Image 1 (cartoon, rainbow, N blue to C red):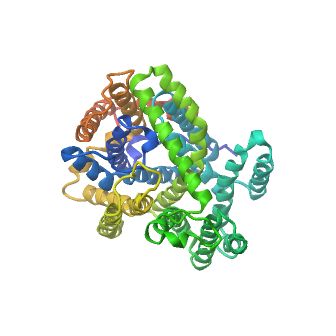
Image 2 (image 1 turned 60 degrees about the vertical axis):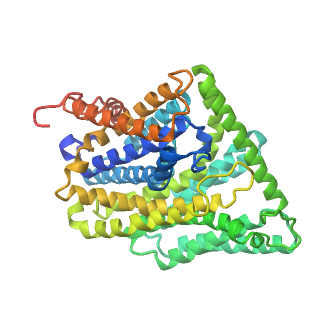
Length: 527
């Protein structure tokens, strides 16, 4: 029997236009957000509007924070999940192996991300996507016995002081195993609910024992984790079928639970601080935290202040070598932080996978009523949830106490997923209307998204850092105008480039590494 041909790049004429347009739209939003963190330490990302802004700078910061922040990396993550599902569908339909090519694809992306982080900018997200994609592959394809063996090995190795990072690796492996129980065919019965309910009940009992024993810290975290497991187990028992809906349900649940727990924790400290103490014997601060929790918060604050000062000093006054050395030192902590963020990313990837498996994105015209509902509900609901948080706090205060900002930021992020889905729907609806030209011009920009993402970092670092033009400190309004101007130049360049070549330069390299053959560079007459 003849062997199946290897997986190969998709010809330009077979591309789904809406995905390219959405990538271009997302990339513009990402640039508008990222430009701030070439004028502000990256460690302050997620801390809201900085104090002291006024006039046009305050207005620009407010609009970006509540219309753009959080929405566009989620949009790009949805597209990453869609791309994963499309590549898998093509391989399955053609009877071709999927895993070797996709593993090379994410390995190349991880290398791009590492180089991007070290050489250019510590706000890179490519490495995060590679790690999230690997967790998704484990959930969908890893054999159960090998996954279990890897989890046990990580726990065993973490007992060695020099190998404590192994315990951090166990977290995504456990997460992948639980996802595998739910997502794979035949796993919608008792296995996944039981895997969630049993440890959840045991953790609930442990929290009660700790509370009765007057334990000073950690009770709230155990209780919240127990509540999460029990809630997910009950939901999975009730909503395990149909199997086709599991990626959407799992993805939405992961996202909502992650930021819902942050909102619950922040809300408890803001609205009812006394409720955070489960034991009368616990020593609590004025914000309802136990003594150990308050001390941990002070340590995190001091570390954040130290890193912020270091970034500011190195990037405004240091050499390029100083900046590379600083980012290299930060890499270990960055990798530890990826474990939590990777869970959220996988949730968003799964929502994107559902869009493809349900045929919603490939046959968008037949699903316009769905997109109308998403736009009509997602955009106002998501934005209003973020604005509600803005009534509590718009930025993190300079002291240790967050004064409600953690609660406000969690609300902003809870609203980011519905708002992002609403933005997707709005773009799709525009593409299927008389106003399609208003967004269709973004397609070439989106086809070269990786090239332009890296290009934006190169340009902005040379403009703002001390080893470049040294424009650090530009007003927020001017930053946004500059980001939009840079995107406009890249859009024009994309049209020029793709009129002559099949792929963007970095996309060409990525495809070569993925498929182990050199793609054609120049267009043929029928393209």
